[in-house]
Length: 104
Image (cartoon, rainbow, N blue to C red; front, side, top):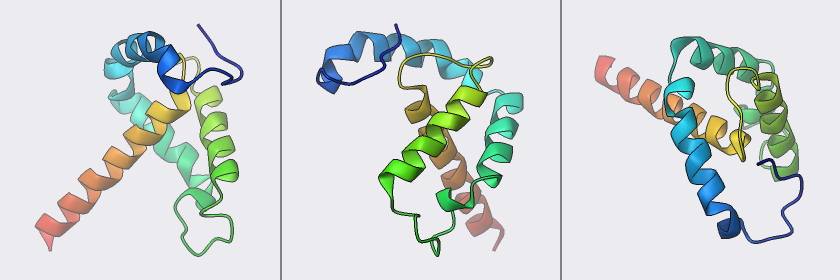
């Protein structure tokens, strides 16, 4: 089920979200998909460059994550896919920072 507008509360779609998450678990963690996400994020410095004037603009970053999700639609799909991709990217960053901390 794809929702175009969120006229209903977020929790009204909890079952759809759980189904999407369980279907995506393995797909998001695949090396191929992870590499695609990293390459796509590189194209949008506003996501990670804190000196950017639109870094904290939720509308701009939300649109970027949605476009990344649309580009990955062949690999992963479902409701709130941009949310899951964004969370996966954040987990990658945390893992990277922990690794750098261990090395230093």
